[in-house]
Image (tube, rainbow, N blue to C red):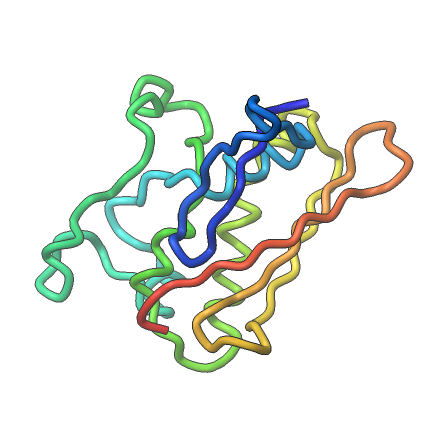
Length: 167
């Protein structure tokens, strides 16, 4: 068992919680997914064409000069050949919803990008991601992550939602 990370959608942050006077425990695969998805990966210097298509802009331009923080974990700077920790989901705060599919496609790509280390390290054999707009809130996207561990009887599926302003 691992320490449980409880995600608060409205506040866009995760935290540990206390249960019976001790840290709550959870499925270690779920904990790895939570850290991988909801830790901020460093943003590239320049967004890709796909990122730009949904409105993700480079840090520090005139439109978002107050948002020039590329985020990320400082320890990644010491391991340039390793896959950075976390995801770029935080960049979707700068995305503009234009149509129903572009953000969902980018979200799926970002989730897979954040979890690919699990497949590379042999933690899982398959990764599947499904994304959809919430039926109850225009500012929320829902997504599921289905992972199969080596030698397991079946896959495990985890469900998440991500809310942000500006969509």
